[in-house]
Length: 418
Image (cartoon, rainbow, N blue to C red; front, side, top):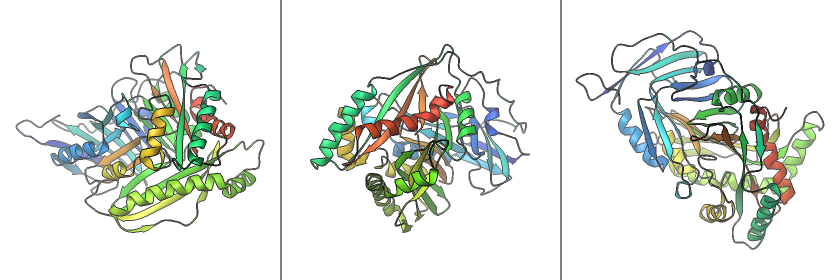
């Protein structure tokens, strides 16, 4: 950690700044940096004061609580949501079945934008430098990108879906979310900033993220804690959308009437509501979902809200909610066993919590969906992931089509699709 001379405490300073423009333009080509942006608002970070690698979010929450207690914070925007020192993290889907480690990073520099406020926070060992960092180096898109089917070709993956449907119809499990992995290679190393930029442009209503080579744009907010209010956006039930050839309203009506998709969605809502309830003095769970439109798909969506225990941080809530039925299945332990036995891959940090928590316990944690992992030992390769919820009425061909639709944002970001 960076400590003040003669002290065992950290010093953070937050200052109001003029509109810095697009936050992502400050991301450097090399060195540690992260991003979490939606509709132009959010944060980017540069550098690391400390890094904690672990297996479980609840261990990271304990670590961050201790670190935060040693930070003295001077702020021109006291109490403003998302300002001040914070930790950014990304966690594995299943730490018991992954070679990846989860990570929580305390950044040196944070630049943020929210609700008409702009700020910069720095953790320093000396005098505060109030100048914004230099704009990052020019972004060079990847060249010569090629794609392969990954460890399980679509036809074989469809057979796995059929096997899982058989288990569900035999009442061995109720729902299983199966994922596919495909691989892309480039002649030059992938620049995560280039992928992030394209996703921000095409999918501005999603949460675009970049942490430790994991980059994507997810529509699913696992949990937000702001003061005493917690919000979780549950997405489950999907239909592909091609606005140039299909009527979006008709497709939305098809989705809203789909017994398969409604059943899948109800499992996900129930799992989040049940996990969140012990931390809330009051909750609101809508009786029926809405339809969330994205450029490539429509989702059934339910926003659950609750009044939370002030001593439970956003990261602790994320640990309690993960994995939900939206990314795992139900019952959780049975669905996870099926995934481990049949999926034939390591998800790593795909479908795990990704986001930030501040020193007050507020924060936002999304699920790392619609994304990919750039390989650390070979940055010319990126693994892309997409999943689909399998229930009793699932058909393999439809689930393959759903994963193809969910892969589209990353294929567009890599220049492999229009």
